[in-house]
Image (cartoon, rainbow, N blue to C red; front, side, top):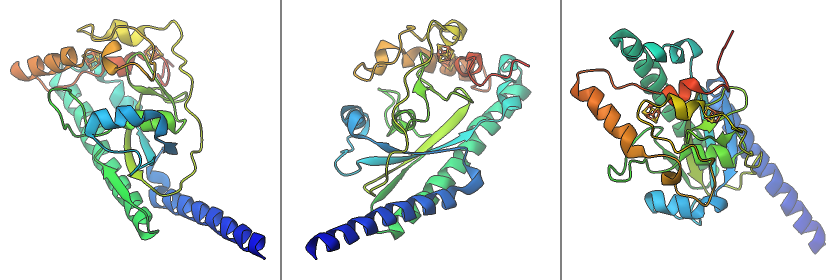
Length: 252
Ligand code: SF4
Ligand code: SF4
């Protein structure tokens, strides 16, 4: 009898996971191109370093991605022309970030209705000018959810769309089951993003979980380049590391 009641309880718990996962899928619907559930334990130190959040409080993340519009990304080589930079900034940052924030808010509400904690992280916000980072690495969550690998560009690279995706995350203690496992990097000998950067901000090293971002990327060089654009009255857009990646690039 006891064994039967434990079994019944565990079957119900599984049903509850699936029910919540289905409700999350329904909440994002066709608005989202990528959806994954990540176990954050392997990134415990990185999460704490970035914003002081404790993985024990939020052991999992929902990772949500929207693919950028190819014809907008393909304007990047013309980014010194004001019209092209403005179109890119509007449709690759502002509109997509706003869509992502709406999705993470909807997902957080669903999780909260199920009786669990949910912390939607803004798609794009800065918490430290010194460390040049946001409150949480959406790319790390997408990587841990098995949606892609972190490339030499420090961008999350998906097999089909490359780095042409923007991401957001909802942290939670809901018992969501990770769908995939972290993907092995497929950059191989490619250095296109490294070569395309106008300020040589990348070292060309492959991503290693235990290494800090600085081993691969000098964020201050990229930041300075953007500051210089602003000082010259230009629209602050670069993204050549994203544009150059052969994954997801329409060469046709
Ligand atoms: S956005 Fe531009 S400057 Fe910054 S890292 Fe990428 S290529 Fe380099
Ligand atoms: S451009 Fe090449 S090295 Fe850079 S992220 Fe893409 S595949 Fe990796």
